[in-house]
Every structure is written in structure tokens, then in C-alpha cells.
Image (tube, rainbow, N blue to C red; front, side, top):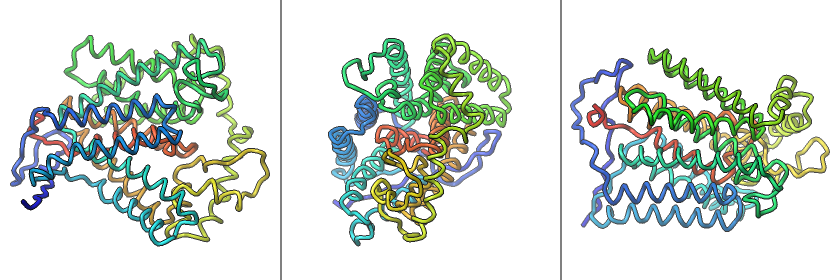
Length: 440
């Protein structure tokens, strides 16, 4: 039997007031959650939860499990469809930049364009795992995607609660067992990477609490969860996390204002006011010190060293401007071009955009920009759908992606496998083309 590949097309754009534009395209209703959707939700949840709890999935053994698990999950989902000869994929604007970026990495490996092929090949496998998770998240139907977001929101609350308990009873070890660095927080070795995790997860319960038609007791529960999760971003002391969360709140309020939901925007403002006293009640003054250092960042040695790294990037790009040095090679190549002396190892550029430019060149950087533009085009379009379920699915993931994209200007969160995997899953959900008739 030949394989019949069906790509489900967009049923038609929606205008801002929520009315439908007449289309001749037939619209198929979402099917109830079946075995396939249950496998997707369970598998995606398990992979993301494991990655976070395994110290952010930074060790080789954890990365191997993430790669093998994502491959098996993709196989479990795709094999029944291939066996039946009818493979269905939802159309998505983000497929093109994701695939082209992957092809650039393949070319680096196959044609020896990478300065160190072994490292680039290793990162290619990781990118393949992220791409698989993105594809699978994008295939989640209405009910499945909402269940997945609910699981992630509840998991985020549990992790935030654990992080606070560990912070208040800290003995210098993660889970009170494994030795850690002084700036570790929650299950992560670095507090900024924990902040990146919460930046992506916190908007999900907030979106569930702020959307209309939700039951009041559920709104209250999600609001409390969102406040606790947001508070840990400040308690962990990440300046980039605090800045990213502030941008998220402004972006979230702006979306509600454009929808003429000013009352919801004011509710969001009240939530922010509730976060402040909670943070200062838990913290012993560390947050104020970190906030104070943001007023004059040029006096901070950490900030200055990151600026020095950014100044060195153009020299690296000029030598290999088209396809870059090879994915994953910045830590290896950079010492040759470092213009300042330090006893520390510069393991990343602390700017995911500049690092993408160095490692994948202009071609890869263009794919990154293409991905981001299409993510917001799809996410904002989905937000305009006048449906609570559609709003939660688009709003929480899109705002979460916004936070990590802002934080990526000053850190390397997207080089932490757990955070990168979560980012691609949220991108897949935020950009999924909704079935408009099924949401009426």
C-alpha cells in the first residue's frame, strides 16, 4: 500500500473581532483524544519532566535518554500511521526554518564544514531530539494540547515549591544529596537556567487564571500557582530572569489590551503586586541587591565580561560568515579569539543569538529569525480566536517563549537541553493551526 501523506491546511484566517472569513476549504472537526493522543501527551510530559529533574539534562547520560526517548516517542506515533498508509501532518509555518536549520547542520557534518565534526555531530543528535518533540507537540489536538499544558503548569508549581523549600533549607546540595555550585537553585546547577525554566512555565497557569469562562476556584488555584512560580524567578536572583519576566508581563498585558480586555490587564497588574510582598517575605534582601546592580550594569564584572565576549564575535564571524564554524563549537573556537585575560573558562557566548551566528553563520542565523517571526505570526493569530481553550493554548506558550527569547540575549538557556526541549514543545503548541469550527 502506498503512503498517503496528508497535510491539514489552515481552515482560514480570523479577523480581530473573532468572526470567520468565508472559505471553500472543508473543515474537519478535532477528534476525541484517542490512544495516539494519549501517547503524545504522556510521552511529551514524561520527557520534559525527566529532563528538568535530571539537573536540566546537562549530563551525557541524561542527554542520551532524551535523544532515545524522543526517537521512540516519534516512532510510536508515526508507525501506526505509516502502517495504515495514511500519514497526517498539520501544516505549520515553522517547519521550513526548523528543517532548513537542521540541513545546515547536516551539511556541516557531511561536507566537513565544521571545524570539529565530532562535536557538531553530537549536537546534531540533540537538535534532532528537539525537532522530534516540536513535531509531536504540534500534532497534539485541542484536548491533548490542553492536557499537556495543564500537566506542565502543575509540574511547574511543584518544582517551584520544591525550589523554595530547598532554598530555605539549603545544605549546598541539589536534592540535599548531590554537590552543587553556590548559585544553584531548584534542580538546576545554575540559577539563571532555573529562571529560564520558570519563564516558560509561569505564563501557562497565569493564562489559565486570566481567561474568561474558567471556574472561579480553578482561576484562584492557577493564580496562586502562577504567583509562587513567578516569585521563585526573583528569589533565585537571576537578573536576566527578572528582566525577561517583566517583559513577559508587559507583553501579556498588551495582548489583553489589544483585545479590549482592560479588566484582565488590571487583574494581571494586581497579580504582580502580590508577587512583590511574597518575594520580600521569603528573601532576606538578596533580591534588592540584585535589582540594585541592574541600575548600573557596567560596574558588574559579570556583565562586562559578557560584553567583551560580544565584541570578539565579529572577528570570528568574518572568517566563516556563511555556514559558521560548526554547531556546538563556540567553547572550542573562542579561546583563539578572546581579547581579554581571565582565569575562567568561557563555555558559551552568553548570547544565544550571537552564538548561533558564530556556529551556523548567516544562513543559520536567518533561520533563527525566520523561526521567531513565524512563531509570533502564528501565535498572535491563534490568540485572536475567541475561545478560552484556543486562548490558553496560544497565550501561555507564546508568552513563555517570549521570556526565554528575551533572556537569551544575556545567557545560554537554549543550550540547556531541558529548557531547549521545553521551548520547542511550547513553540509547537503556540504555532499549531487551530480548527476554528471545533472551537465555537
